[in-house]
Image 1 (cartoon, rainbow, N blue to C red):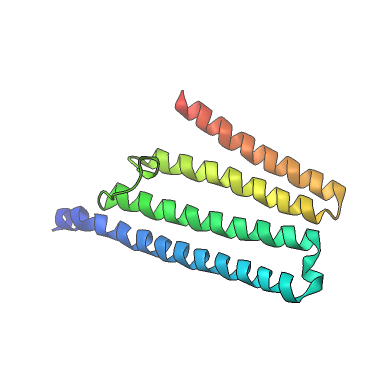
Image 2: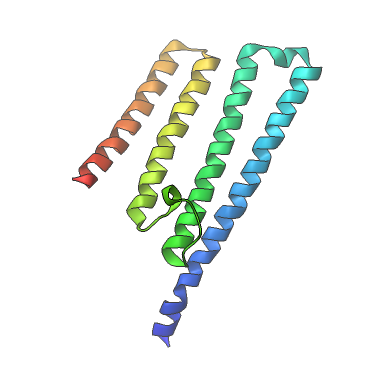
Length: 152
């Protein structure tokens, strides 16, 4: 009986795969909403036309959409690893958990770069910005080092 339950356990992975897909869809729609709200502001509110405000808003939209894509990639990855194969492009095909972690690490690096760019555009305190950049650089270096060691 326990063996049957464990063999049917792959269905457990269906729940996180579906919930991540729902999250990806929601974030995608939210990103569109923020973009439309920004465009509305540009047309009807002169204070929103400030370049620093506009660039921060558009960077936020990119960040939201990128997170949406990450959730989608993880949704597909979990489904393929534990439930069944999907008809997806080769670059999205996941065959083991390390591939999924590698995709996460590369996207985390990209999100950190976008987050730093947003902080740089807002530029309030040079020391804080420098420390933030150093913290991000350390995280990126650790992720790259981890995967270089893992490859060997």
